[in-house]
Image (cartoon, rainbow, N blue to C red; front, side, top):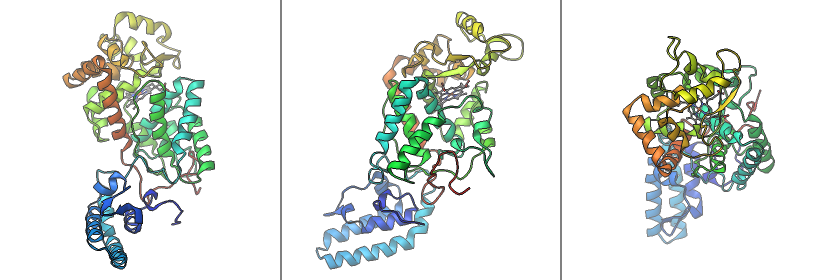
Length: 399
Ligand code: HEM
C-alpha cells in the first residue's frame, strides 16, 4: 500500500491507519478540545471514541510535552492493538463517509464536478435527469461503487447491458470528462463512485432542486454484476409489493421510495417502458384504468401498439426540465407516466398519504428527497482498503 501525502483523516484506507494517524496528528486535539475532526471520527467508531477521550483527558491533565508525547505513543500502540476491533465495527451500519473527504487531497474536486455537470446540462437539460438516474442504478447494485460505469472486459460483464440499462441509461461521457479533469488536478484521488454521487446532487440543484451535503470517501469496485442489475433495479411494471421489497433490500423504506420516485419530476421515459399501460395492463387486453383517459389518448398517439419503442415522453409532462413537486400533483390527477409511479397512489394508503403531502408541500418533498438521497448514497460503499480509485471509470486499474 502506498502512502500519499494528504492528511491522515483524508486517507481512504483502513480505519486502523486513520485511527492511529489521528492520534499523532497534532491539530486534531488542542487544549482538550477536538478541533477539526470530521463527524465520524467522534461518533462512528467505539475504539476511536474511547481512545480520543483518553487522549483528551491526558492532554488536559498533563502540561509536559514529554508526557504528552509518551501518551501519544502509548495511545498509538493501543489503537494499533485494537484495530481489528475497529475494523469489525467499520462494516456496520455507519459508512465512513463525510463531506470534507477531499478538502485537503483535492480541494477543487467539488468545483470541477459542478462546472462540468453545469456545462453538460446547459447543452442538454435532460442530462441532469440522466446523471441522477445513473447514481440510482449504481447504488442498487453492489452498493454505490461505480460498478455501473465499467465496460465489459475479461472477467467483467458490464451492467450497461442489463434490462433496465440497455438503450436507456446515459451520461457516461459526462462522467468520463469529469474523471479526466480530476485525474489532471489530483491523480488517483477522487473515486468514480463519489463523482456519480456529486454529479447527481449537482444535477438536482441545477434544475431547481434542493442542495444537500454529500458524504464522500467511496471507493470503486473491482467488478460489476449484470445479474444484480437485472434483479435489484425495480421495473416499471413491477407490483407495488415488489418495488417496496426491492427498496427494503437496500435499506430504504416507504418514505424513501416515495421521495426518491420524485426524481421522475425530471427526465424522460421510452414508450417501451409504459406501453403495457396503454393497451394491455393486466393481460386482459384493456388499458390501465388508473390512467386519465385524455392523457392516455395523448400517449397512445406517440406510443403505438407496435413500433416507436424509443419514442420519448417526459415523466412529468407539466414541467419536465424543472425539479419541483409537479410529479406528485400529476399522480393525484391520474397523470403519472409509469405504472410504478401511479401505484404510489393506488398501491397503499401510506404511500398515497406521502404523495398527497409532497404534492401539497414542495418544501417537505425537498427536505425528504435530500435525506433519502444521502441514505441511498450510503448503500454499502467500499471504504478502507476495499476496491480502488480507478484511473478510468470504465475499467479497473490492472487489466
Ligand atoms: C421506484 C422505482 C423506479 C422505477 C420502476 C423506475 C423506472 C424508470 C424507468 C422505466 C425510466 C425510463 C427509462 C427508459 O424508458 O429509458 C426511468 C427514468 C428515470 N428515473 Fe426511474 N425508476 C424508479 C426509481 C427511480 C429513482 C429512485 C430515481 C433516482 C433517485 C430515478 C430516477 C430516474 C430519472 C431521473 C429518470 C429519467 C432519466 C433520463 O431522462 O435519462 N428513478 N425510471
